[in-house]
Amino acid sequence: MTDLAKIPDPAQIDVIAPNFKRRHSGVTSTVIRLVPVQAQHIAIVASGPELPPEVPNLPPSRLMWLSRRGPHGARVWHARRNVEMLAGLALKYLAGKKFKLLFTSAAQRRHTGFTRWLIRNMDDIIATSAKSAQYLERPATVIHHGVNCDDFQPVADRAALRRTLELPEDGLLVGCFGRIRHQKGNDLFIKVMIRVCQEVPQARALMMGRATDEHADFLDGLKKEVAAAGLSDRILFRDEVPIAKLAAHFQALDLYVAPQRWEGFGLTPLEAKACGVPAVATKVGAFEELIVEGGTGHLVEIEDVDAITTHVTNLLTDDAARHRYSEAARAHVVGGFSIQAEAAAIIAVYRRLLDTP
Image 1 (cartoon, one colour):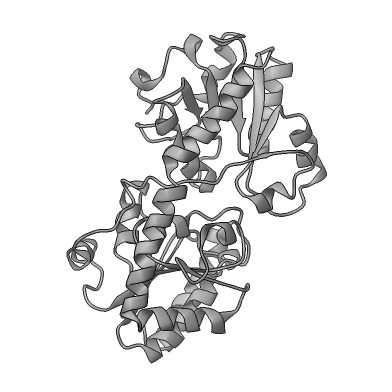
Image 2: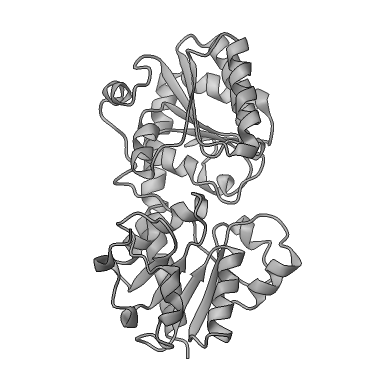
């Protein structure tokens, strides 16, 4: 239930960040991470169902009852999905709300005609990477996602943490987190780790995430593949965990693999790096903008199982290199990808819109 004490007086709200999807997604994660940080500096609320209590949240049912004007004239409506752009247009032109419409795009593909029409009707655009900006037919401000470097940071006693999480205390643990489906390359991760486990006795793996009903057979096939290789005790599967417990699972890792076939942005390598965990990732999403090749991790072509296997094996068997990458990974995120930097850059866009007649 929404904590009404955390909702500013509706008349004082400057920015609304809708999140209309009930099921957890990357956009939901963004809203949950960002809005509490932004709320320290500007009058912003989310608007959606079932958000954590720390997120200032104006229920969607109350949107129609907002005053037409905000405290500074217009309000900013910050959409991240088509349905939210459409809702903003309806509230602005049908309900008469004085809104400045902002859209953040992470997609790295040609947009549909409908999406292009929606984008043309926005007042301003943010792209989460330079690559995603190339697919927009108008100028956009590029603002990378960031990580809370206080929550996501290296842990002093990894073995003790693993014991708490009921993970193997010994060995070298390689992780792959997120939704489980073909697009995410989970099958590639399993192929890699079967090979690695056969070559590196200390290697362990953790695949963590949720498979929706339509992808349940895909997940079941991966488990059968691991069992057939006789590695069920070393390649582990776990369902997704609450966001509050996510950082601890990154902290428990020695190495992270992001084997996606396609991705919009892809936050997990940044979360891993913030915890001092190097990442091996495919050249999709924003990964080429997030990983320093040969410095904080490695980049490979899509579906290149051999290359991923080589990099994972080399890093697991070279303690000095892994330690060097670990320190560089943490420093890279702290220096350029903090959530505070992301929040400040987006707030600058909000203020520009609020100051525009």
